[in-house]
Image 1 (cartoon, rainbow, N blue to C red):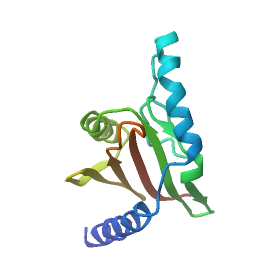
Image 2 (cartoon, helix red, strand yellow):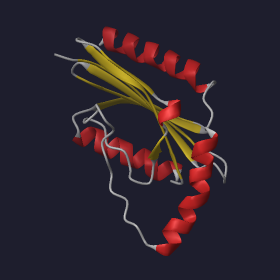
Image 3 (cartoon, rainbow, N blue to C red):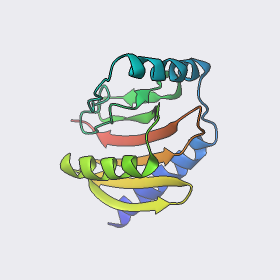
Image 4 (tube, rainbow, N blue to C red):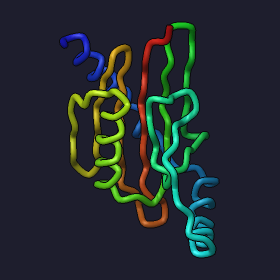
Amino acid sequence: MNKSMKTILVTAAIALLFSGCTTLSPDSESNDTTAPQAQADTAPTYQPYHPDDFEEILIPGELTWNREESMTINTDSFAGGILNFTGRVEINSLTDFFISTMKKNGWTMNGSVKSEDVLLAFTREGGNCMIKIRSGSITKGTNVFVYINRTTK
């Protein structure tokens, strides 16, 4: 338990370190302006999806992956990264979604912090995951940062 708490604290420190430097790219802002028109033309149903290389995490279909603001690492013994997603989703429904789906995917919730942002901490055998949900402005939508690390075999 002591080792997992240290891991969570280190992951939280890394998350806080990177969160101050992250901004939306101009490309993702232009995507936000076309999304309402596409929704008006057809009524799409958004299906949750798994990000590449991380089948143990489910992302709501309303969120779009920002490749420019994400990074991953894969070695023989370790896989991890910081994944960034944006979309127009209410912060409380995102929190409920992640708590529910992470549990279904074998993660144990170790804690949460709720203020202007929401921070959720999860662990499972061989891995840790922190999800930071940041409510954005009307034009930029909500930001979700997934900080994940796990051992690979």
